[in-house]
Every structure is written in structure tokens, then in C-alpha cells.
Image 1: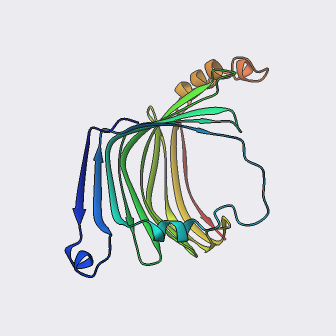
Image 2: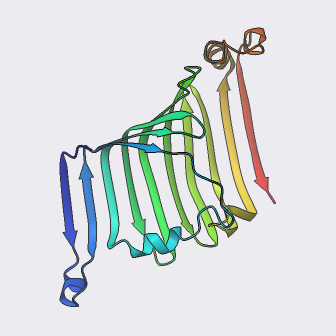
Length: 208
């Protein structure tokens, strides 16, 4: 891990109370590489304890600028690189908020060498019983997908029953076909995709 610069802001009021907590931490130019081994499936909530763990962290706000994270996953077998990310995370009373101003995400399958490069922007907040997505935008070339909305339920169990999301997508068909045929050339179906031209639009709402 390499860190160029770290700035820390300490809460004077909390220091006077004898508490060791930080108002904010700013990190610039960090590069982290991690390996995530295959984990055994366990009964219970997939994110059990995550909000208790976040609440125990003695930092109220974390700001990261020009951050790169490279992760190697054992299951599924993928390498993921989040490059030049600019993000800010802040603890709230019952959860947290996260703003990603800009991040390049590269996902690659080492076996097939299939890869995709995406640009990501997002603004969201989450608590134990609610997830609010103010904005989410994923872009690949001239194609993009956007979403905003909210869901209520059990966040730690990844079980959000009350969903209300607006989604929009625009896909450049010729470019998407060329990428699909090249990336999945090892399959039997990709080379058979007929030529495609123009754009495809999706504008809808997901609600339940």
C-alpha cells in the first residue's frame, strides 16, 4: 500500500470530553492491493454486523482522492481494479452516506481474458432499514445506465421489499456488439450476433 498524503482533522469538543475520535480523515494518492479468498456460505444475514462495525470506527468522515484499489477474487475468479477514485464517506446517526465523484472500474476474467472498463458516479446513503440512491451513473464509452430511488427493508439481509427506482439507459448498439463479440469470442453464441446499428433506449420505473 502506498500513500502520498494524509490529512487529519480532530474534533476539539470530543478531545475535551476525553474521547479519541476524529472529525475527518483525508487521504490522497493511495494504492491498495487485496486478495479475497473463497468463503464458506454461512447461515444468517450476508451483511450482519456491518452497521455496528461502522459505528465503532472512530472517524466521522473519510475523504479519498486519487485512490486505486486492486482486488483479486477467488470466487468468482475475477480481478477488479477501481482506479483514480474520488469519494467521500460520512457516518450518519443510523448509517452512512457515500459519494463517488469519479471512478474507473476495470473487471477482468483471468481465464477468458474478458474485460470491461466502466466509469462510475454515485451518491447514496444506507441504514439498517433503508437505502436511498440519490443518483447512480455507470458509463461504458457512449453507452450509459442511470438510476435513482429508494428501498426499505432489512439492509443487512439484502432484503429490500419496498422498492421504487427510476432507471434510464442508452446503448450504442454497434459499439456494444463489437465489444461483446470480441470479449466473448470463445463462446458459441457471441460470433453469431447479427450486425446492429443505432441506439437503444430504456426509460422506466421499478416498483414493488
